[in-house]
Length: 137
Image 1 (cartoon, rainbow, N blue to C red):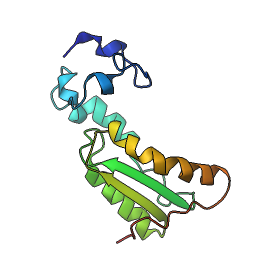
Image 2: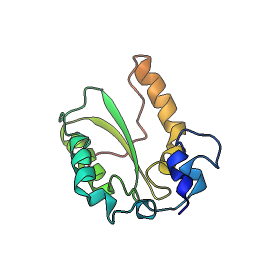
Image 3: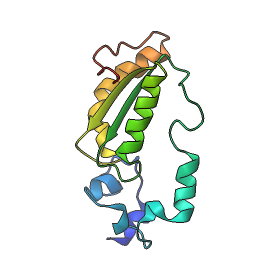
Image 4: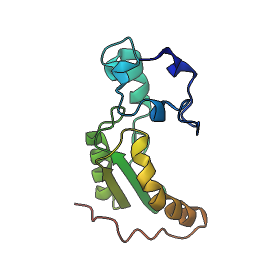
């Protein structure tokens, strides 16, 4: 893998300086010197501290829009599925979309068309219309 990855930026719109665009379908182990980087103790400790849903059981918002790639290396889909189910068990109105395309960042792109109207309604103080959401099971 090229050495320039350390100078790249995820927010860059230039494909040559954005690692997601420059290295599509690359895996984390291609950029690290530590095998199984996610399981490396210092990295795992940080991830344990920022685990989704860990600080509270029920979200404070009237609804939640979750989307995630089943191929995400950083956050395995099983933990997101479990969080979705725990929110459902708490009676939270949840829209949960799973993507079969992309990875941790690229999978978000298709959901922007849904996320923007959802966020507009949240920030305008209205209850988001997520009637198209699959029912909690």
